[in-house]
Length: 301
Image (cartoon, rainbow, N blue to C red; front, side):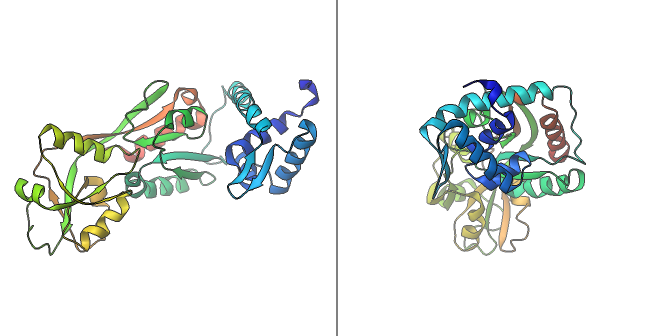
């Protein structure tokens, strides 16, 4: 097929559909109306003589032919966008853009509200999409352009990524106010003997860091329940005799839970470092640079 016979706007539409698997979301991604995106899909189907994207219960899924096209078209669109926008700045006040973040549950609770409020004031046309980090493959996902920033503890984001420290945090413990054993302070014996509610979610790094420290000190927690999300821990602790070990900024965000007591940990856990990570492809991107600077100002100690 001769390249001159193809409207490059159709390739942009194809790339958006391949990323979003949804006509409406793909239209929003490139600034088209939903009917215009449907029309672009119809033209693509005629041009390539293939359905390309088929509606299923899991969204618009690519045909094998479309899967083969997706990678090369994505790279071509990215190269063109980078070349055309290399000298362009980013005006947050007038921008109409979607930023995608990979956050842990702790991040959603601690700084997502601040992030949204700050963007509302400085960049009212900007919208945010939050995703959880997959157990494997976050590097590939972000390298493919599906994610502007990953904020938290992501030790595997190394090769091909930049990172920047945002703040340090420490671990504290939470128990219910009327706990039958633990009062105003927590001893090491109490910490080891008390049932624990722990998080076994993937991609966050927090509980993995805890276990490594306890293992080095030859200490074992009595685990009563393991859950996939941090956000359910306060409810479990308030309604049981369990204890939970969480970052202090998360504990500070839980002040509305009246039946929770925050205590210093009897174990001197090393401070954890919260960082923002971005792929090298976006290091010079004006919008990404503005976003990184905004996050630093928002979350700095």
